[in-house]
Image (cartoon, rainbow, N blue to C red; front, side, top):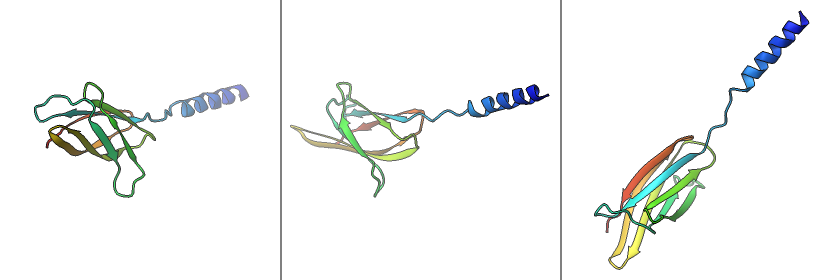
Length: 114
C-alpha cells in the first residue's frame, strides 16, 4: 500500500512541475523603406517606452534595411519607433509604434519621408 501511495505521489509531482516553461523573449524586426519603397541601409532606429519608462534602445539598420530588437524580460510591450536618416537631400523621418509579444517575432515596416 505504501509503495502505491509513494508511486502516485512521485508521478503527480512529476506531472505538476514538468509542465511549466518560462516564456521566451519577444523579438521585433523593423524594416525601413524610403518614399520610393526601397530599403534604407544605415538608417537610425530609436525605440522608447511610454513617458517615464526606462526602456530606451536604438541601432542602425543593416544593408537590407532591417534592424532586430529582442525585448528582455519576456513581457508584452508597446514601444514608440522613431527612424531617421540625414543625407544630402536632408532629414527623412518615420514615426510609429510596435507591439512586442513574448515568444513571437513581430515584423513592422516604416517609410521615411522628408
